[in-house]
Every structure is written in C-alpha cells, then in structure tokens.
Amino acid sequence: MIVTLLFCLIVFFASGGVLFLVLILLSRFPHIRRGKKRDAYLPYVDKMVSSLLFEQVAYTEILESADYKKLSKSKGFNLLLLRSVIQLHATYAGTYASRLEGFYTAAGLQYWSEAKIGRHSWKAKCRGIREVSEMRYTPAYTLIYRYIDSRNAVLRLEALSGLVRLKGFEGLKLLRHYALPINDWIQINMLH
Image (tube, rainbow, N blue to C red; front, side, top):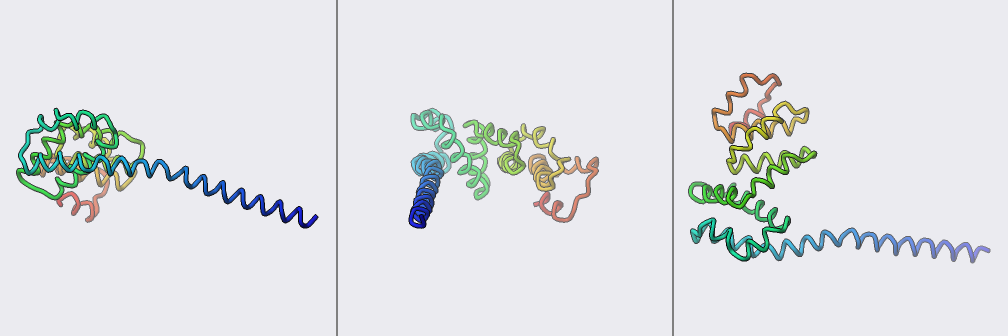
C-alpha cells in the first residue's frame, strides 16, 4: 500500500514537472520567434536609416525599394524602424533630425505612434505621445490635448510636456486655463 502510494506520488510529481517544463517552452516560443524576426529585420533597418542619413538618399527611393515594400507589411519591421528612427532623432540634431522627421511622416510611422496613443494602457499612450512630440508631428496636437486632464499623473505630465514640445513656448499658453497644480518636476520637464 505504501509502495503504491509512493509510486503514485512519484508519477504525479514527475508528470507535473514535465508538464511545467513543456508549458515554459511553449510560452517562450513567441518571444524566441519575435527575437529571430527582429534580428532578421535589423540589417535592413540599419541599411535604410544609414542610407537616409549618411548617403543622402531620398525618402522616395527608400520607400520604393523592393526591400521596404516587402518588409513594410510586417508590424515587427515597422515597430523596429519606428524605434530606430526615434532613437536616432533623440541623438542627432539639425539636418539629420529634419531628415528623420521627414522620413517619419513619409513612411507613415506616425500612424503607429497615434495607434499607441489610442490604446487603453497609459504606458502605451505615454510612449506614443513621446514619439510624436519627439518627431515634432504637430497634427497629433489634438490627440495629445485630450490627456492633459487625465487622472493618471504620469500621462498628464507626458501630455503637457508633449504639447509644449510640439508648440514650443506658444504651448505654454494652455497653462493659463489649466486648473490642476503643476509641481516643480512637471515644470522642469516641460521646459526641458
């Protein structure tokens, strides 16, 4: 009787362990697949962005290339291209920054940022607001304006600083009618 009970316990825990291992592997497969796709897209993104910035290739030439037409149908490629353009824009200034801004709108990357602003998650909204304000995409002003009275303090801060980044000091005029208190941290971030 004890041997049978011991055998059942061993089988139960062994099968539970195997099931747990299988579930872990199954949960990792999408992440691994996404990582492989990202690694496959990265050389194309680097080539496109470097030719845009350093070889002075026109937007239309990049957008009409066979590689871009094939890869732009993929969400992963577009998000990787968006992230790369945003990171480079934060790094460069002057002509390079204006070329990246032009490419951002010519490639339709602003739609991905606007989609993030429309999501339910406040983190995604903040990311989208940061992206459109970093790229100085002024048509998103009305989208961002909706969130200056948000209950979420981080989203409210991001919306306020995004509006100021989009409109410059003229964006500070909206603060005359702003009812919520503005602490020092928010003021510093808006002027930065």
